[in-house]
Image 1 (spheres, rainbow, N blue to C red):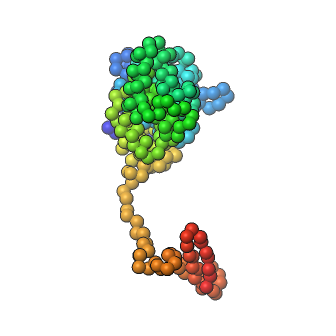
Image 2 (cartoon, rainbow, N blue to C red):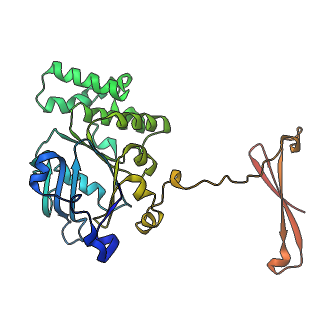
Image 3 (tube, helix red, strand yellow):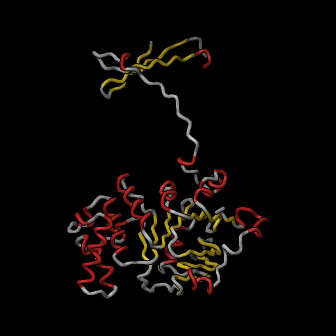
Length: 323
């Protein structure tokens, strides 16, 4: 699927946008959509719009990466979708129903950038149980959901720990377990890999790849987005710049750089660097000192002196000698 570019990225060619891809009528949303926004705009008082006339259609089961530099409107979009903020203009539909600010919708769950913003109970088990309890589930059903969420996320060994005594990665996975215990149909993940080590990050990738929920994922971790998402939306200055296949959009270096991003490293053809390696034979067995001589031509610097600087590194100490 080729990326669909908006007026902000192609100017006079905006009329070439695929109209079928961007059909955001309410009737369409009520047939098959998980999320639909129509001309969504939001701005704080006396400020420029954070989101400006954003129209978006998300099919059920899609995993969509929302990318863009800091301050482009990604987190604000998520806050609007889950009803935390009220739009200045436009409409939002979630699973066929309009989103009303402040209304509790268990069908949608959001992971905040900082897990400390949503972990507050004395134990992990109690924290995960908070959502199901507020949905009116009885104790038996709540316990079943908590145990399943703990098992799915691999956090069962943390069940009786205090959330704020956990590592950043453990907190993140516990927060995700709390979302899953509510059985949401739409999941909004804001920077989900920010606190994760490489092993936990890999476990999260594997988990998300197996998940059936509709997901919107805002992330600066573009390699993560490549592995998890089947669609990418590039946002800049509160507007959708490009919408389409992750490889098509993130592989376009000119497009990425124009909007303050870098092409993912895995999409750049690699040239093996020619590293100088110090052979074992050249190392002194007595002192284990690695020596590198740097010839400096001082004539080029406006002097007549030629000098060699020797740098020696021994047992974590650095000595500079001139000869």
